[in-house]
Image (tube, rainbow, N blue to C red; front, side):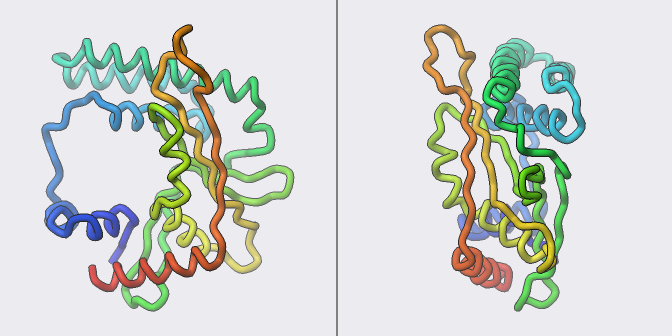
Length: 232
């Protein structure tokens, strides 16, 4: 049985939702094509293309929105307005990277990596994690995991260290890494604010947060995951 952090979260939050989603496989079919979640997903895909496949993120973003307009022409005006915002965010982010040199010490080594590893203490169960991006720090060869978020401010980034998803990903990577493997240097989260950077908007518009977990935190995460996976 494969268990992901998303399933554990759903099981912990609402077992009825877990039953409908993960056991019966029921998903919504009438979700609108616009909104903060959809915008964040498209920005994420554009940056994934930029880092993982060296594609023009603005071209990828434009393609994503053209596809959505063709699928839902009745939302064309809303999608056009959302695209204008997403384009401003992504173009500004690329400018910020160039000006700040934020990526000078990093190289991408994997994108959308699907990791599966046996869960100790729970026979027949594997943990599954999809790492958005694995990067190598050039200065010391350490590996770290990178993700991108969009929001109105940076409060989400400040709360991410407590997010069970990040702890779960760290646990999976530690279980999957050989003892003599590269050093694991934690996570970085780049946050792009949902603003067009007009003259009335106050910077900063982008921020990178880095964090790691102690062995005790990883051990506590293992115990929690073992308990939840056994119940599932």
